[in-house]
Image 1: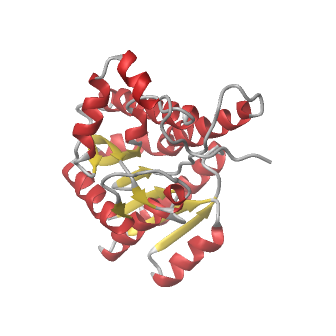
Image 2 (image 1 turned 45 degrees about the vertical axis):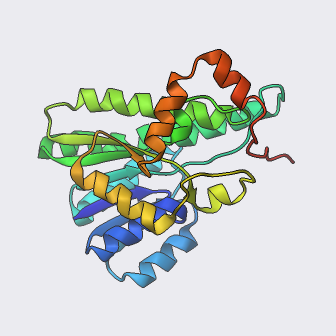
Length: 252
């Protein structure tokens, strides 16, 4: 098995990389922090192909894809996992750049990750393109406008891609994690129901990928929560969530 994973240096990406490596896969591990990728490679000799790059860099992703395919072959699974979560408030002009940053990584980073592989996987007639979205993309959360918008956009993009590839043999899998214990959630100072440990989350996500699920929420308990939130009328949703705890902004 050949697997490509972005954001593979920590959190869900690292846990997924370990999961597939333990199953004997060859893994293209992509992240900005090359030293952490090298640590993973030392743990699994001759199994990890390290690519230290930023998913906003389409040219670097194309070069990494070409190198991996030349050395290992067409991947069976490509996971666009790289993402950032930063608190934002529209009233601050300095948050304009933060909105751009979050959208570029969380949404466009997935597009740039998939592009080098779509054609060759379609030719091969099989494979999985997996986008790690979020339950935060179901409705807009106060103080998380950039993050919620990026994940909502990613969910819609993945659906469009799934329709484009219908009948090709290439499955598009949308995964919406709830709260997973990672550095991204460590800074949240509010209740996070149904929290999963990251290794458990990786196993559950991999199970959904194996099934070729078109859409999955992990853990499953967050799916009915998401459905209820979608059904709430705006006046009630606004009243309930206007004063909800927010992810902190990063300033300075």
